[in-house]
Length: 304
Image 1 (cartoon, rainbow, N blue to C red):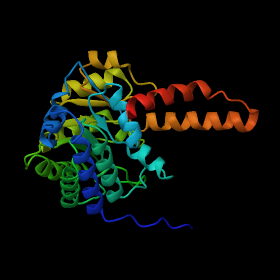
Image 2 (spheres, rainbow, N blue to C red):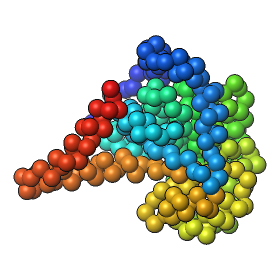
Image 3 (cartoon, helix red, strand yellow):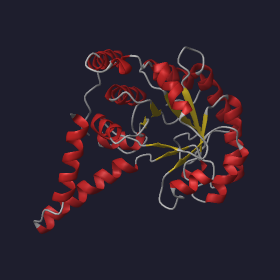
């Protein structure tokens, strides 16, 4: 088994990312300089409007973050699966320090608010969940999500009481300081073989009562189920754009406030890479040329 080299200390990355942001800001208009982390957090929450959903793309590295920002998106979110793929791993195989370092990189890439996919906050105990949120605020994130998936497929969801306690601990830290970190609470039933709408709604309601700012049940596809979730909770609702899910206009009509893509963009890019490489290997052809030209032009615009 090949061992991975150890990462530098997390604080070292924080210092580098802060220096990067300061250097970029010195070259940009004064409006950029005045955009603080607290401003970004307030802006991010304000972008959640029922019936006018925020389209929240998920970059997987610094370059994809800058490219998406150049296309006019108003906020970004990290993707645990997409980031893990950049490390040659599957989803769930990233450490907390790695996820926070990645979050710092995406924050430094643009002036947009960034929300982080923090999985289950890399912890079971509410106190440790709260610590993760504190670190997420420290790296400059405007928001982040905490899910009720345990990481154990044989026992996928925390009990309802513990799940709500974990959100409450996260919310206490998220809203305690000058940066009102936008906390998204996720009920993961539909991603792990438990399509129980009643339990999902009960969990989301408990998460709202515990202090979550945004509610998210990834895996919902039926527009009737989504409408019911929106009706029965009193927080903005995020829907994951997956195969078979309603279109953005349909979700807007249902009152959804945010639509995110998770790892889909990252895997679309990897799919294009696999197709291009297979065509070259098997047929000796260059069918990727047109897509390559499009990508090169987009990169030049984004990175200039």
